[in-house]
Every structure is written in C-alpha cells, then in structure tokens.
Length: 336
Image (cartoon, rainbow, N blue to C red):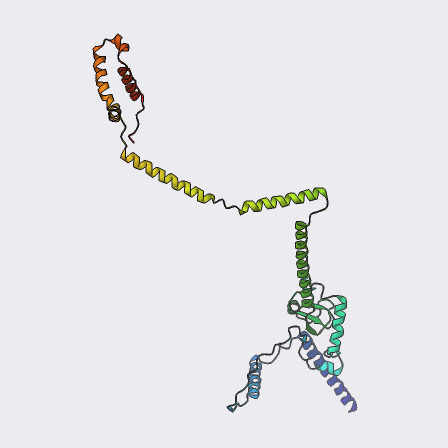
C-alpha cells in the first residue's frame, strides 16, 4: 500500500510539473491566445465580464441643484518621467514551484536614478539611436532597465518584429522601460548654442564693418584706398540725390513734336498748292506798283529794239530784267 501511494504521488508530481512547464512556456512565448476552448464560449465570457464591469462602474446621479465648479484640464509637466510597463503579471505555476526564476520586481525610483546615471556616464543620450542611427532630437525616448536608450517608436517596432521583449543590444529579457527626456534636453541646448553662436558672429561682423567704415587705417596704401572709397561713396550719394527726371523730359519733347506736327499739318491744309511764275509776278506787282509801269515800257522797248541793241537799253529795263530773272530763278515755294 505504501509503495502504491508513493508511486501515485510521484506520478502526480510529474503531472503537475509537466503542466507547470507547459503553462510557463505558453506565457514565455506569449501564446495565451492559442486556446483549445471553443472561441464562441471565450467571446461570450468576455462579453459577460465587460457587462459586469460596466454595471459596477455605473452610479446613480442625483441632481442637487447646486452649481458644480468645472475644473479645467491639469497641465502636466512635458518633461515628466514615467514608467511604461504595466503591473507585473502573476507568477506562473512553474515559478511558484521553483522550476524557473520569478521575474524581477519593478524598479524603485532610486534604482531608476542609478540606471539613469549609468546611462549618462556612458553618454548614450548624446549618441544616435542604435536602431535607426538618427539623433534623438525632440522625439520620445525610452530608457531600459539595462541602461540602454532608444527611440520609443524604434523599440516598439523592434518588439513587434522580433515578437520578444529583449534588449536589441544586450539581449536582456523582460526589461523595464521608462520615458526620459535627456536627448530632447541636450538637443535644445545644442540648438540654443548654435543660435547664440550665429547671433554673436553677426554682431561681431557688424561691429567690425562699422569699424572699418569709420576708422581709417594707419598704413599709407590702405589709408589712400580708404579715402578713395569714401570719396566714391560721397560722389555716388551726390549723384543719387539729383533728380534728373529723364522720363519727364522725354515726354515734354514728344509733346512739343506733336504740337509742331499739328501746326505744320494745319499750314499744309491751308496753303497746300505750289506757286507758279505767274503767281510770283502778281506778288511782285502787288508789292511794288512802280514795277508795273516800268515793266510795261521796258517790254515795249525790248520789242522795238533789234537783238543786238538790247545792251543799250535804259537802266530801268536792265533793272526790270534782273528783277524778273531773279524772280524766275527763285525756287517754287508755298504761299505763307
């Protein structure tokens, strides 16, 4: 009987150990969703638990008529550090039996400070992210319990790809994560330093240009060049101060030309016909009435005298002939 009892107890222990190992392996591989039970039953159980939780959270509200003070949303510190890991899962049967080591307890605030100091001494926040090889800048940053630092998005992508919670560098299992802002703080300091350096350089360059523009150098060649530049600058300033109004001058010239063209056009419209020799004779007669009498007598004398005796004619005849020849030699013009 005793042997049978001992044998049965050993078999029970082996069965419990096997079940404990299987349960621990499922927990370790995160395969709890692979359940043998009917999925319809599991869904019904989930609905029941949700309805129970909703019933527990509902409370009767009585309107007392009193004004309630509405509190605005609390503004949290943007650089507040907090732990991302939820509460540790309960121990598995294998861990309770001592077959596997239990998971480490959550780190306290003092332990997190030690881990952070170790990361600072290693200079992890000053270096790029080990996964994406980019600067941390202002993106969310996480610190692991093994003192390694990553981008939060990069670590989530790595966990999703590897399907395990292991550190990408040291391969530590079941690490704890904490959101920190050391990289963002260092990036702000770096940006502020760069802005200050640029501003100080601008101020110094401006001061040096003013000094070069106002204080002449001591060297003779440089001094001569300095005053030549000053003279050129003054001359350019004087030229720029004059108002030439070239466009106004051109517009006035165009206006004068248009006026002259209009006057000439009117004159052509009034006196457009050309003067003939007969017209010039009439004009000459109108100007000097004596020419008409002398001209008539001279014509009669010329008709009576022979051709060779024309030189012996009277002086009035020669004057009339010269006047008529001059009148004929005058080019044809327009009557004014």
